[in-house]
Structure formats: structure tokens, C-alpha cells
Amino acid sequence: MASGENDAANENAKSRGFLTRQWGRVRQLFSDMEARSALRAQMADLDRRGGLDNVLTDLGISRPALESIIRGYPESGRLLPAMAKRLGLDITKLDPRWRYNIQRNCAECQSQGRCRHWLATASAESTEYRAFCPNAELFDPVLESAPEI
Image (cartoon, rainbow, N blue to C red):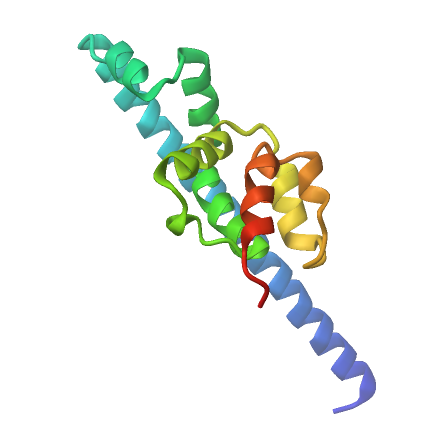
């Protein structure tokens, strides 16, 4: 194959890869929208039956916080494990109250775009997450007490 043909084939492969990734992102966006819509419908049904306020009280969540949680759903459930892995944390081994606070902060976070970008582009040693992550202050003591590998 001539050099020009190789270049064209490489460009076609890059374009296909780019389009495949973009299509995956579009599918994920629609899937997330459906999940949020279903969660809103469930919360509305619970509210109609008079049970929502009791559940929110038990969880210590206000109605505005619930809306924030729904807006971030289900992506926060993907970002938190990715962040923990990136930082070398096993949040499943944390005290349940500590883990709850971390999960709740992530669920209510308004910086998902910055988080996604940091996870995709930052070096392994980067600490820039501290500028946007509501869990930075909770992660730091755990990271400081982690044994050196």
C-alpha cells in the first residue's frame, strides 16, 4: 500500500473511532435522561401518596437537594467510583457514615463536567480535583492514612 493510501486508511480509522465514541456518548446521554425521568416519576408518585417528605426526612435530604441529586443521577454513580479508583481509595472499606457523606456530596455535586474532564485528562499525580470536588476534604484524611505502596 502506498504512503498516501496508508494515511487515508489511518484517517478513516480515526474518524470511525471518533464517531463511535461520540455515538456512545449520545446513547449514554439519552439513557441518563430516561433514568432521571423514571426517578422523577417515582419521587412524584411517592409525593402523591404522601410518603416523600418522610423519606427525605429519614435521609436528611431537603427537596432542593433531592432535585440536585436527580439532576446528577445516574452519572454521579459512575463518577464516584472512577474518582475513588483514580485516587487509590476503596470507599467500600470506609466507615459507613463516612461513605454516606462522600456518596451524598457526590450525588449533590454541581461539578460533574469538571470531574469528567479531570478524570479523562489529568495526570495520575494531579491534585486539581481539590478545586472542584466537594469530597476533597473527606478524601484527604483517608489518603493521608493510607499505607504507602
